[in-house]
Image 1 (spheres, rainbow, N blue to C red):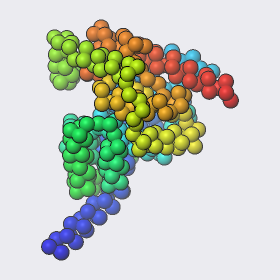
Image 2 (cartoon, rainbow, N blue to C red):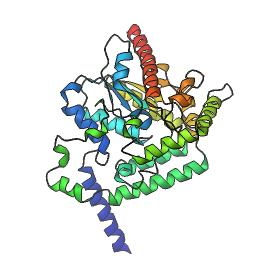
Image 3 (cartoon, rainbow, N blue to C red):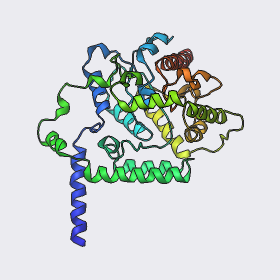
Image 4 (cartoon, one colour):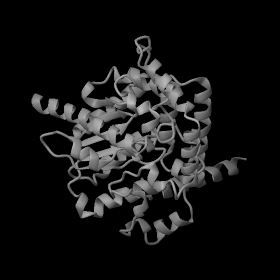
Length: 354
């Protein structure tokens, strides 16, 4: 028993040492492709604004529309660095890594989607869902979750997913390909990336319509929504309740607030203006966690597009793709323009104060 324990500990330590030799993005292929494009594509050298988040950002915020719609003294050159299922706290961790990586030298602004703790069931059993779950990140995620407003059932499910991901990270994060990277010629040194992850505009935004013929699941999701739009009404009613005068804002996750404030602080140290973003068509669990936090953050550090009173179009069938948090191309263009307007207001006010 004693020898078995020592052997297990030795295996654990060796695997952790090998994992530390891999680049931080190893396992997140879409992020790798976008990072490499930013490093090697000369047309993107002036990029000064990044969008980071889940598919709510990846599939909806169009850099070309954003830059055209912005009205600021300094022109924006934006890029969509978002990845499917890039939830909190992975997104916060990846943002920190990106700042330390410093591969966007002209970076001035980051729009980062904010949400409650989540880990998609679709990626939990893949390296994509496990690569970031070091022991320290696992403990931080549990601590953040323990103080959240999510229900016991939601917390129990997330603890199970996080624990599974952490165990796999500890004992199955290094595969044969990684061994070749460590002891041979690292493939990530090759200046090759998959352009299919970059969208038709080649600036990181990929609308769901672009993938509808290639991915059957997306096509099925669209057809299901057109046949039954009732879920969109559920989302609208939840948003109405969340933005009503009776919605409680006095209870908040102090740990999560500390995380957001720390992200603002380290961004300021690098002369990057961080703006948290709330996407439309979110769920009640998101509103319960995030709305009280935004009340305690300076207005120049967040943009909330989920309010159904201010943005009713985002809850209409004509602007929606699937009634599950994603807008169609027309709705995405409208969302991007309104984000650009709110962003311009923040930046222009900040310039006046200087």
